[in-house]
Each structure stands twice: as C-alpha cells, then as structure tokens.
Image 1 (cartoon, rainbow, N blue to C red):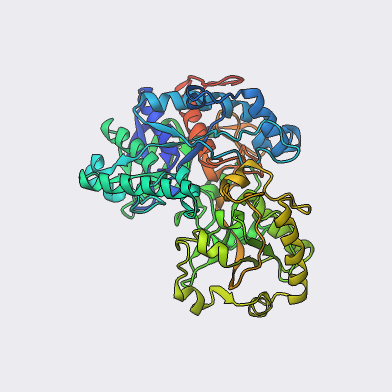
Image 2: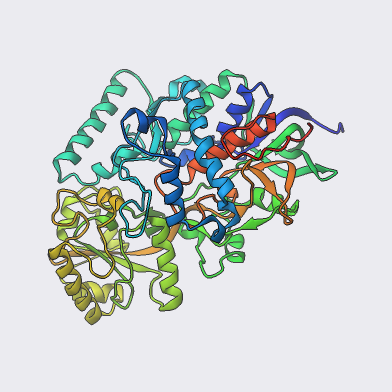
Amino acid sequence: MPEWDHTTDFLVIGSGGGLVGALRAATLGMDVLVAEKSDMVGGSTGMSGGVIWLPDNPLMARDGVPDSPAEATAYFDTVVGKAADSSPASSDARRQKYLSAGNEMFAFLEDSGLPFIRIDGYSDYYAGVRGVEGGKAHSRSVEAAAFDTRQLGEWAKRLRPPVAGAMTMYTGEAAYASRLNTREGISVMTRVMARTVWGRLRAKKYVTNGAALIGYLLKDLLDRGVPIWTRTALVDLVVENGEVRGAVLERDGKPVRVRARRGVLVSAGGFSRNAQMRSDHSDGQPGRVEWTSANPGDTGEALEIMVKQGAATDMLDEAWWMPSWLMPDGVPSMCLSERCKPYSIMVDVHGNRYFNEAVAYQEAGQRMFAHERDVGGAVPSWLIVDSRHRSRYVFGFAPPGRTPKEWISSGAMKKADTLADLARQCGIDARNLAATVERFNGFARAGVDEDFHRGEGAHEQYQGDPSHQPNACLGPVEKGPFYAVALYPGDIGTNGGVLCDEQARVLDTGGSPIPGLYAAGNCTASVMGRKYLGAGATIGPSVVFSFVAADHAHGTSVGEHTGAGQPPGH
C-alpha cells in the first residue's frame, strides 16, 4: 500500500462554510480537495438562513448606512465583554481579524460572482438594549441572492434544501411574513409568492437562504474542477514530527490516505447530535439531542480527532441555543418571532415570568438553564398566547387563524377557554399565573415592561409587530381561547470546540499553533464568545476564518493585526 493515495495542497473537511476556504485556496492556485461525510453538500450552513454578520460591509456603505470598526469593537466589548475577560477564542486579535478580513472575504466573493443583498431592518440582536454600545438597528447582515440550482446539473440533487422550502423567500423577509395582519406583511408575502411563481413560469429552480450561498460556492468550485468527495468521512489526521501532513479518510468503505502539502482545514460542524459528548460537557447546561435542530451530521468525530492530536478546547458546554417546542411527531420547532409578538407571555411551571421573552435566542436558552438551575421549573417553560396572537401571527408554519387539529389532539399545543383551565392542563400554578398575567397586562397596556424591558431593543421590535402600539412586543394576554406550548432549550448547533488563533490555526494545550491544522465553524470555540451578536453570527466566523485559513496556508495574509507566521512547508 503506498504511503499516500492522493495528494493535494489544501484539504477541506466539511462542505459548509469551509467551501469559502476551498474557493479561496483554488483561486490562489492551490490544488484543493473537499471531503464531506454525508451524501449532501452544505452542512449546517446549507440548512440555515445563510446570513453573514459583517460589520461595516460594502453594502452598508452603498446604502448610506454608517458603520466603523470602532463601533463594531465597542459592540463586541459591551455584549460579549472585554476580550481579556472572555474566552481566548474571542481575543482582541481574533475579533480584529474577523472585522478586517471579513470585508476582504466579501469583496473576494463578490468578485467571484456571488451576489449579496443587505437585510435592511434585521438589526443587531442587542442594538438599543440598555448599556450596549455600537449596535446597529440598520442591518449589518447580508445574504446571498436567489440561486438557480439548474446550474449545478446532477449536483443539484446533492444540495441541502433551503429553510424556506419551495418558496423563494429570503431570510430577511421571514419576520415580515410572520405578521400577515399588517399591510407590510401582506406586501412582503405577495412579493415572495410572485417571485416564486415567476421563477416557476420561467422554468427556474430557485433556492434561497443557506442553500443559495452553498449553491453559488459549489458551482464555482465545480467550474474550477475542484473535486468534492461526498460520503467521505475523516478518520484521523496524519501527523509527522508534530506537523499535520494529511488525513486518513474513509471513502466507499475503504481508507484513503490524503497528503495535504499546505494544510488541512477542518470545518465539519459540532456535536449537537452526539448524546454522549453533550453529557460529558454539559456543565449545568445539559442540552439534549431530542431538542436540537442541528445538521444530522453534527456528531463530533472531527472535534474528537483534533483533541486526540493535542488541540486545546473551550466552551464545550455552550451551544447556539434556540427555544423550541416539540411537534406531534416529536420534531423540534424553533420558536423565535412567536416569543416577540404581542399577546404572548412565557412563564415557568410556577407561573412566574423570569426574563425578557424577546431576547436573542442564544441568551433565551441560557436564561432557561440558569433559572432551572437556581429555581427549577424552567425546562420546560410555557409560552402562552391568546386568541389575538393566534388569529394575527404565524405560529411555527401555521398561518394566522389556522391551528392544525393534530397539534391540539396530540397535546403538543394546549388550548383552553380560560387561563385557569390552561394552567391545569400544563401543570402550571394557576394562582401565580393569574397574578403574573395581571401584572404583565398592566405593562402591556402602558407599553413599558418594568420588570424585564421587553420591546426596548431594535431586534425585539423587528421581530414584534410595529403596527401594534405603544409597544411592538407587548399586548395583554386576556382574550380566550388561550394556547400554550412547552418550550425547551433547543439549539441549532454547538459553539464550543477547539481553540484557534487569528490565522485560524488550531492551538495545542500549551497555546502554540499545531502546524498544518486549521479549523473554522462550529467545531471551534466561537469568536463571538457566549453571545449571539446578530443574524449570521454563526456563519460569519465560519466563512471568514475559512477564508483566512486558505490565505495563511498559501503564505499570504488578509486583514489587519495579522501577526502572520509562515505556513507549513515554508
């Protein structure tokens, strides 16, 4: 058996955000190989909204929306915390690399033919929140324009389907479409339907969201002749004299030894689907496989392989939490805009509110765990809405006023004419619930949440109902029938993993880079620390640091404050 079965310059493990690194490496003249363990291309990125959080990006400048690296740094500092007090993954060097290299990556992708649109209105998640500096109410988030999958030929069958399904709906349109009681919501939904029908009449096969982003990247890679091996799993890294020289892959049931002359980029996701790893690293935040909406391939083997080679880790107890309820078939349904709309309230089993229901989903999950640990009765918590919420807003994928009968008959959603009966069905303390709702309704009528400040932040208002006054997020819960779902701290992926430096090089337990090994995405400890700064805060670091890794492996360097060293083999 030969020492190497295949030789390339740059080996990319995973076909999500790492495709940006693959495309960059190919453009720089390197031989590239992409290995994806499933039969579908896209990973968690392909399943997502496909949004990239990118401060001070060119689309903001073109639209006349002011921003600066200083404002973005202030936003990092006041939300995530000063770098010195945060995870090493969120060091000053990594933050500045993310901010500076991000726009170079954006320009590169635009030059490569990837069209972007700015999601106007989709504000930073903490913009306008008390004590927060540098947040932007006018969006820093961008997403790819619709992509026609016919350009992929047979590869179209291997592209993960978009979140929007058959509708050609952009992620930035979802919040508007969730409030079909408003003129704006109807206008946006009409535009979505017209775009969808027009595409079909023209025999186009458009996708949006993460599928569009992956579609453009995949098309460019295929045009450049970059091999993409699906059903190919990482088995081990090949290390010689302390340097990663390549990897052992399993393809078609057989081991394949691949030499990577310039380095290996692992961008293979986290471990949301690995019950044992979740248990081992829970540290008081025991998220469960049954509650996750993460990529089915999010099983953690790549992370374990890097750890075996001496990689340091951090924040393994953390995930990108997303409060979710369980559908009749047990599949989790993410709960975002529903929590932000008027005529809704969230309580623990004791009938008490304990946080601002409309906060960013990452923080919402953290608050649920903290309350469960300190008081109990928060997992699950209960989201209660009245008849006006159900008649005016989308819930899950159910349109206003149309609650599937099986939701009620299965018990996945409770329904009652009175709050007292609803409390009985849910096992909530009825007396406390009545008192909590009475106090909450007073806040709702006044438009000021004196307990938790719901509706003050720009993102809360964006996900709420701006046509509702005096507060887009507050409406009294008083008109029967009433509905309730049990909310669990689900997630869309883990956000702890191996520690990397600002060049995306994996660090060992002594803090030194492991030569030849790069990583990006959910298998790494995030530069965002334990906070979700805005739409695209997961995909942003994945694509930016994949781009950075390719440049460093080539021997070039992007962004300011690089402190670049020489890549392996130089």
